[in-house]
Length: 209
Length: 255
Image (cartoon, rainbow over all chains, first blue to last red; front, side, top):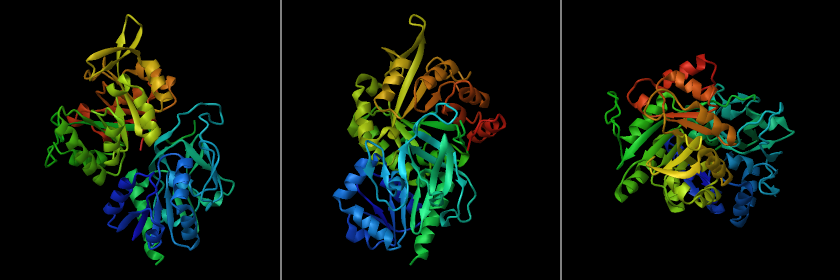
């Protein structure tokens, strides 16, 4: 059973619809005791980093997610949920993240290295470039996925990035280390490619039991 | 800029009392009025997003739209926007919680611009699309904003309004040229370019698509980030697939 973490800031419905289409069982909960029993977790998220961390703290989910991940059970963060896996963010003033992966979350500057301006948010279909091996990318070809975000992850440790997309900067798109994974785009809105990536995560969750 | 971000092609479906209207001509469909079946068709064709415009006049029709949104969200793996009849934060909540990715606001935002701040503050800018109906006005030498489905002229000019909407938190502009709408002689490239260069968020060109070349113009000259069309897709004058393969040949990045 997949547990979807409900802390009040995610498009839970779309994620659960995608899991339904893939024929897996899931439940939505904000209760650490219930979530503890999940074979794998999904941390969705839309909105601001600071608000999200405040909600996770208030519901005593911060510590729980950190412990769950350290126990080696799989965790997948999606969009803001992926950003929360990192150490800190500059969104609405600095705030601490879950610190499961090394790096920080910064805003797109809107100007690329040649001084050319570009639109923020990064919204639409962008091509994934596989940069490192990941179970999530098993058997898949580099393809387009759907992004909507104004902040991205900056990290000195490139080994956590397994796929990236080009948008003024190299945007980490699929990340992972150990049993902690993240996708900056919305797999549940990314057509066949998104569903295939999610399916790989679900297979990996099943395999861990 | 270095990017593989694609230009998006967006079919638009008009829904009335829960049914797609404007006589979509698909012999292959069991029920050409079923929004879910049509959505699945366009998804398979390679549409990057969909827009549903609720043109129901009744309260019951609006309620039905929520069911339509839920059914579409359950079956569709690409993003979709719902517009029409959204006047309050409560309306936005109803539609977004039913599974839509974005809502588009038109008249309601012009009448009460704070609605944009409220929506963006609650759901984030990425959920808030501002739809602008624009018509050129010689007396002021620029485009004027119209509301109420294009029936009512306002005192606002399009560029200023687009900028204000973005400052208030709009994440995208859906820009319809009333001068070009229905003419099938191409998107309004000048208008699209003017707005796209004035704002920092993506702009969807709408109104006037007649063939695949028009899309190329909208992207290359109009600097649009996405382009929307209805009848040419519904009446099979061209298909999303055809448009995309043409754009690819012309060096436009599409999915």
